[in-house]
Amino acid sequence: MGVDERRQQLIGVALDLFSRRSPDEVSIDEIAVAAGISRPLVYHYFPGKLSLYEAALTRASEDLADRFAEPHEGPLGARLLRVMRRFFDFVEEHGPGFSALMRGGPAVGSSATNALIQSVRQAAYEQMLSHLDVTDVSPRLELLVRSWISLAESTALIWLDGRRIPRRELEIQLVHDFAALAAVSAAYDQEMAGLLKKMVKDEPADGHLADLVGRLISLGS
Amino acid sequence: MGVDERRQQLIGVALDLFSRRSPDEVSIDEIAVAAGISRPLVYHYFPGKLSLYEAALTRASEDLADRFAEPHEGPLGARLLRVMRRFFDFVEEHGPGFSALMRGGPAVGSSATNALIQSVRQAAYEQMLSHLDVTDVSPRLELLVRSWISLAESTALIWLDGRRIPRRELEIQLVHDFAALAAVSAAYDQEMAGLLKKMVKDEPADGHLADLVGRLISLGS
Image (tube, rainbow over all chains, first blue to last red; front, side, top):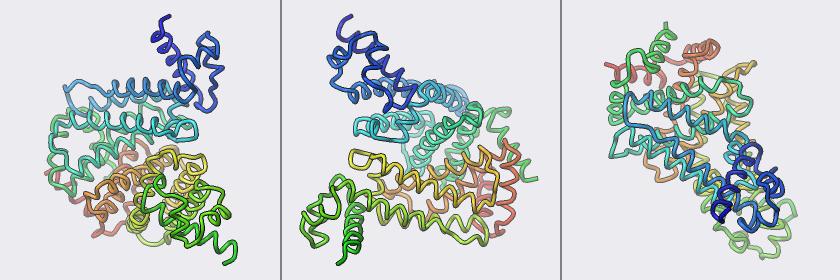
């Protein structure tokens, strides 16, 4: 194997191990065994566990950011639901590692890992704005999108802790949460009200959002 | 000054400095000058900056948790709004330190600081449950309360970054966000629907929640 090929293989093996258990619990020895090479050879490619962890996290971050890409076609709710499904796929694939990373801790709280988390959040933010099709981003819209992204993160983390609600329900719930938070923002802001109307206009009459509105109305009766 | 008195004074001085700037940027020398004692004397009371930071953070955590306490009287929306006001008071008092802590980083990402953050979240969670007056906590209710707490954190962090929306508006918005997220949850869950009805029943007809509902209805027309 060439140098780069070997590095890429090691990153893949490490990412798999860092995903399945808390990174604190994964040793270089274990990574070497899983990669079928000696411990010194691992150190030949990566100076230590932290640099290998950061390389694995970089790959995972790029993978996650790629999953946010969604064609600009069809109703916004359906697009968002597809992205939520791919997000939960990712969370499921990397469960324990995702939890450990997002909850912080000695092995996972470096400036480099924080910068990677921020870069994924920024990618999610930019994707959302591009789908909302706005050029001038008001402070309220920025708050809505960024705080909803953090809601998606915390919902996924709480789901991982026991999986007591089916993920399919949470994926839909997060789409509805976005609409609900947008509605609250729109109640006090003209610009957000315009955006909300645009979002709702494109929704199909038999879609998830119409279903939600119907259910909410029946709650009041 | 006695030993304990001196320790408490140092913690107060350090908390003030750690609140006003990112803890990374605060030196032991500076703390010594602000406390009017020598650098070696600081080390006599605290082995290093991290232990002083953790002591300051412990005091701030207890202070924040105390602010969640709210009498069990009157409509839930008004109680929650008073808590949100005290939360934003705290965030305003400790702005840069709160930001640095919650965004993570080398000086602030220890296991001890993470445990303190978790303890404050847990205190907020328990307060919310006691006001909702439920004994059997369903997974959806737990998700609602915990994810709303994370929404309050991220809203405060985004506010600190430029303060482009008046905090008074965000305090009310967070109360409405809670109602909106509860409504989404209630649309798909009988138990949550019952809880939502109970919450809304006690709200005054001229209160914030009625105002929100009125505004939302007018959006649709």
